[in-house]
Length: 382
Figure 1 (cartoon, rainbow, N blue to C red):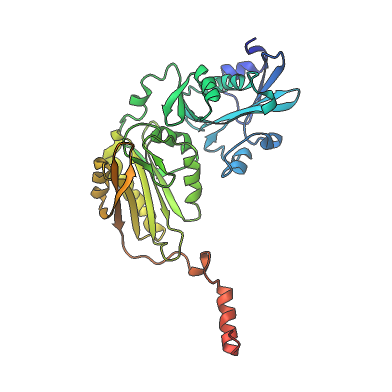
Figure 2 (tube, rainbow, N blue to C red; figure 1 turned 30 degrees about the horizontal axis):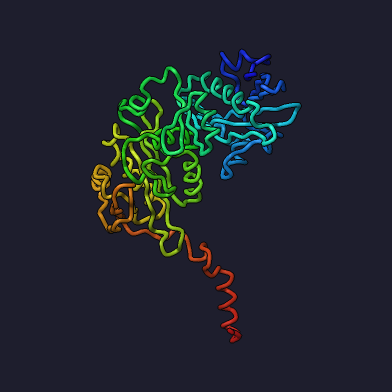
């Protein structure tokens, strides 16, 4: 017996109208075992359900408690049998546009697998996504059984171990979504850019070998949770993250910088960036904005790692004033050939260090210095 929807509570709201933030819809599905699966669509804060679903550890508390709803719309689809949670999944999409999303944390309790639970939840998820005219969903899997499930729901293999669902009305998504539509503006990244950045990084163009140096994301590597790590790494004045956003509220470029975490190198930061080809002309503008952010953080030098084969990327950084400072021979391999990795550096006016030695691990703290000095003055230094 296939999964069959037998009844629905508030289904009209689920299928035809946009539900209110933090509202809940419920529908009942008969599984192939004859059991009834109650599917609840929940929006943060999840309250008692927070401990029963999964989320990235770096933002778990903030997201499930509803602190990120300003930027991210994250419906959770929870399946229950006789009041027991047996499966769940979610997608993450910008609160304001909801056109692209990232599917994450698909799970089914081991003793309830092969009943069609994940399939029922995925069907509900896609229908909810389509309510807001969503057009592209991204996910990843290394499980062939899960891959078959996603294929049945319209996902197909896209980049690395990633898959993508395109809505029937998506058109030529790869050609149109990041197409030029007038000058873009530069702003600070927000949590709502998680799915938008996924589109930029999961696009095959530009064919730069190094996509993001911080998260070890290369040409054929998919990108989703990497954004979460980057956002957390730049907190507390450790870096900055700026994006290039076009008139359609699509992210067509990103630049992330992160300072070195030692007292002696805190004036140096690594910069990683990506710009889609249709906005290459604004690439230097984005890099200049990143450099201004660096100055405000007392950073004196920005370093970028570039594969020697990526001439258009080298041209872009040179236009801003970066110079080749080092060449790491045969550092990279693309599956066919060995490639040098280049280090380009932009030096800026000298700065006053942001932090003292005592702010770093392994260095003597002020109170220790005071005690040593006091002991020395007493002549009891040992």
